[in-house]
Length: 209
Image (cartoon, rainbow, N blue to C red; front, top):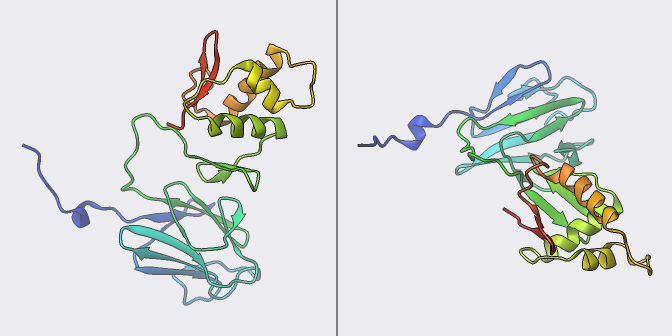
């Protein structure tokens, strides 16, 4: 018979690690980060504001927010504009110091498939919430496939969508090479793709999970 235990009793504290490997446990409901010695986490740099950023609890969520700092707080390589929920592995940069957020209580999937976000209007793709550099053709291909998720897209249709400037058509090897490059960036194991599937004799199909 399985034993039930209190969530509060079993939950371990989330924490940050800095580049030296030092651990900073997030014990309080609100942890201040900044240059002032009164902060729970002190970063001694003139590029860091006295009270620079805050990590706070909101129920079971852990929230990062900038406190109007002069030089900004960077989250997974991008300047933080609004408060954001932290997840295991997120990167936080304060001044010249980059912290990594760890959540020991996170539930790991047996087979990990990174989260993929596509902002077609902004032309940005994020893998595990970190911006992913793609070439224009790679981005066009990904946007085309995701817009038709679950539908088999023929090579002819892909060629027309990705290379509209080629009136005479596109060779199969060009499409295959582009598929291969895109898989190498978004698939955990490109040799066994989980997102961009080859449908033999018909084309390719995109699956989000």
